[in-house]
Length: 224
Image 1 (cartoon, rainbow, N blue to C red):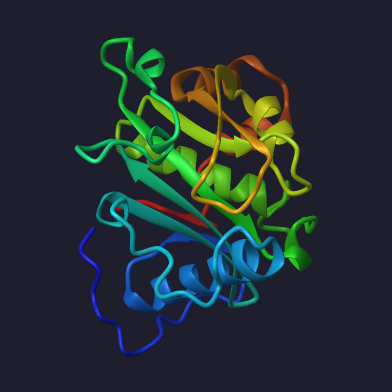
Image 2 (cartoon, rainbow, N blue to C red):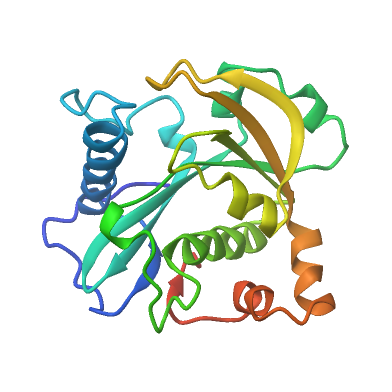
């Protein structure tokens, strides 16, 4: 993605929404969230360092932002599989995941929501902000012909979304490791989601949640 300089903050609806970062002002919001949640709250990153998102994966990344009342309260980074590999490969080989021919991978990481908004359900996000970010991820993946999503999660931290993602349809790969990039001794595991399998669930299941995930939604603006 080519980031454009946007001297005027883009005016967005005061209603809850998920959208793709598309300007430097959006990236400033990403950096602010990383500092607040992974830095000051959890102590996983050094909040006083320079730009936190500007690593070697940034040129191959897209960022989802969640807004409530015009304020950015959550984010997720999707890293495309390219020459630099996926972030999880800093810690563990994923040959097992790549073994199936034709798989087109992205890694979902840096999924975070400000503490005050983690348990909120809103009229435009009836299953919460986490579910809305996951929905944005899925719709972006379908549009961009991604077949599988890799997620790198801590197993035992208080904020880990491990249980919700397993319930959603992510499966354990058996790959466990220590994420030495973050200041956290807990073990991490790699999960894998088959997009086509999840999509088919919306037709096989009577669950309102699966219908929500796949339904068109004007609160989800991730289409390029």
